[in-house]
Amino acid sequence: MEGLSIADAKALERHARPGAANLVECDLCDATSTDQVIAAVRPDRIFHLAAQSFVPTSWHAPAHTIQTNVIGQLNLFEAIRRAGISPRIHIAGSSEQYGLVHEDEIPVRESNPFRPLSPYAVSKVAQEMLAYQYHQSYGFHTIVTRGFNHTGPRRGQVLVTSTFAKQIAEVDAGLREPVIDVGDLSSKRDWTDVRDMVRGYWLALERCTAGEAYNISSDRAISIGEMLDVLLSFSARRIETRVDPSRLRPSDVKLLRGDSTKFRRATGWAPTIPFSQTMEDLVNYWRERVLPLPSPARR
Image 1 (tube, rainbow, N blue to C red):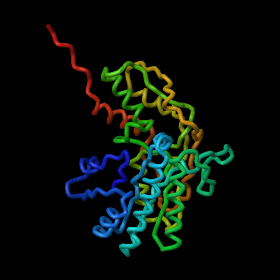
Image 2 (image 1 turned 45 degrees about the horizontal axis):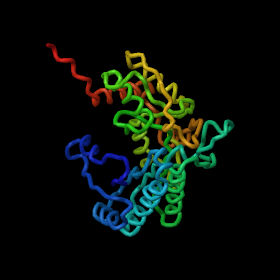
Image 3 (image 1 turned 60 degrees about the vertical axis):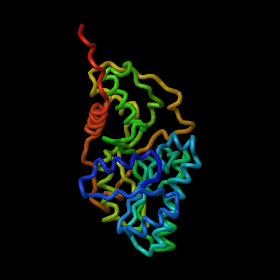
Image 4 (image 1 turned 120 degrees about the vertical axis):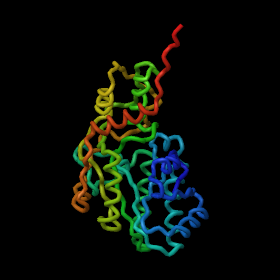
């Protein structure tokens, strides 16, 4: 179900195996449309990923972010309640909910307080509280995962790993000067390959306890600058960096490193794809989509 955000719903059709998935488009901000889809499909498992998920956009469009993420989820829950069904529901939360984390709180456990630093983070806190309330009030089988940063092939180009990888691919193809536009490179994040993350989502619904929240993380922190260095290592070109003020945020989380012990014990999950492999796959993904400049015609 599509939240009419930056997600490309048609990409699901392109990458799904024939006959493996039936794509039904629905605007979760439209309660009537959501009611109709839930009543018709009557799902037994729901992975709720529809959202405005780009933190910088939430600064420019806070009302849209809250409307899409919070009201969209409320419409989904009400549609489920009115349909009289009891699906298992996965809510994709975010490590951004923790926000301002003090040094003595690292690694971040599920018991850490929320100090959100962006409208996006506020919306995710609200989504989790809504999931808990519907679990307590109506017996909804809701499970929240607080995913730390995750990336990999097909990641949207507005997000930091993809925007770097795309720029590198463009440099290698001769489509731009050998300069990468960057923001703050000092922030540290806990990165997991998206393929490991979605495996965790499935295990969450199969093995985790309803009404609970779980961190999913690699449990190690890498700075944005270190991440960029890994990406640059896959290019033969000498590429410089240039700070773009538009990429700097009014306030930012400086360090996030998770503790996923609770989730690993509940599910047996562990990340399997090395960070360097994730970065290499991401660069190669963009190389396939960036066309090199044609060779000059011979006279």
